[in-house]
Length: 248
Image (cartoon, rainbow, N blue to C red; front, side, top):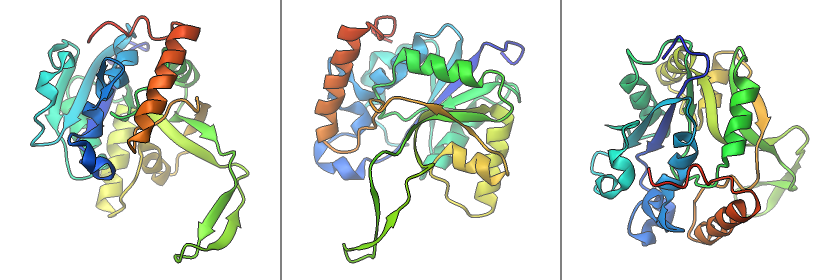
């Protein structure tokens, strides 16, 4: 699809062990949320976009939950086995696109446990970055007062929040650049926590695209109730998910 400026690919790393939700019994991306699994909500906005050329879901080697989902049989979705860290899994996803994605094709990386991405928010990211030389990510400005700990649960410093943003997903970069960036970080022994950090290590400056505070990541059990409220609000106020609400 490299000849089409409108097309993009998606990688969804879903090989994590969800250590902070170990009591849930299943990885957080497979928890039940408003009638479907968390990961199916996360996939829905991309499947609703006609420009989506394909999606790679990166699974743990011992994953026993994916095949039970309707999404497992969607023609746009393929799966591969991931690695021990997020960056390793994204590299596995990029390798799966080798020969299909062109060097200048856009690749969007989205968290499997981030189910409240609006289709309008995704559209804004695509529109902002379509002609960008570097790419970028959805993010929100930090509004809370930030404290640095002394390691003993006491405040060592109040951190200036001016210019600070919370990184969200999707993060959107060219296939070739992202492949080189993650490989370079691995060669240097740097464990990057998101794709933008890897791009930054190449000396590039990803663009920050304002996202929604509702674009939350499921991390603890309480997040499920919050996500359900957000999804209900999206449906009632805007119908934003109607195109993506069909089962993948």
